[in-house]
Length: 319
Ligand SMILES: *[C@@H]1O[C@H](CO)[C@@H](O)[C@H](O)[C@H]1NC(C)=O
Ligand SMILES: *[C@@H]1O[C@H](CO)[C@@H](O)[C@H](O)[C@H]1NC(C)=O
Ligand SMILES: *[C@@H]1O[C@H](CO)[C@@H](O)[C@H](O)[C@H]1NC(C)=O
Ligand SMILES: *[C@@H]1O[C@H](CO)[C@@H](O)[C@H](O)[C@H]1NC(C)=O
Image (cartoon, rainbow, N blue to C red; front, top):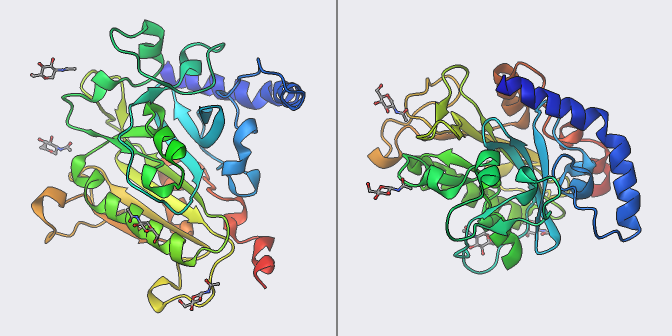
């Protein structure tokens, strides 16, 4: 029943939305301040996707993540799971420390006429429509999962964009062994690789792979936990003199990380010699094609992360 709901929502998004979007775009262009439809369409935030082309094959509720009246990144959200399928963003070389940010929510998920800007959770009891529409802080408190950013704050230069990643629609239940271990090392190595060798825009998409059967949920059966996390980047303009160990990492590269030590080892093998607290949370780096093969297998449909695998005519711009 819940899946059906999401499906209908998607049909709405692909069917009636384009006309509505065109109207909205016109109104926005005319400076209309009432046009706040940041949920249900990626139209206002296509700049976060390579060639303005959101990943194909995954269905859910698009969110243009807006903070302090500026679009910061994009998320494909699942209402039935109360957690995201993926977040997409432009990487910028980070400066300064991780902000100690307060957690935020997306008002337009609960109220279509609500503010398009994400908001801090207010103190005290929460509005029930908000609780129904998304994960809230008590879901994570005392659970066996930490709050795992899909779009991490450390991949951004501006303080406000970093703060904007602290919204629960950008977060999935992630085991600490992954979040503080191999997945964090992946985020740092991507940071280093892109900061050093990417010469133009770097588009990143980070998402999740659900369990095939037997979904895992946070304690109250409200928020679905992923079996794996994945990430891929597309950097069409890069330094051609790459060190040997990075030769296959441009223009695209990808990875899948374990979020459950009990998972089988077919997708990501386990390093049995890893420190106990991180054992079973390995990350396997791989080509974009290999990632897309695993996504196709699990979602039972072709999933394309980047337009033409990020290898299109942009390559000629390098020469
Ligand atoms: C978390 O656990 C503590 C100690 O058992 C309890 O006092 C607190 O109410 C719990 N909080 C939530 C949000 O479940
Ligand atoms: C990210 O890369 C930049 C540039 O190389 C570096 O200054 C910064 O310390 C890195 N941050 C992390 C958390 O690795
Ligand atoms: C490309 O990398 C080489 C070797 O690491 C470096 O010497 C050169 O300055 C880089 N070029 C650019 C445009 O960053
Ligand atoms: C792994 O399996 C064990 C035994 O069935 C169980 O106790 C544990 O909670 C499982 N771990 C996770 C992360 O699901």
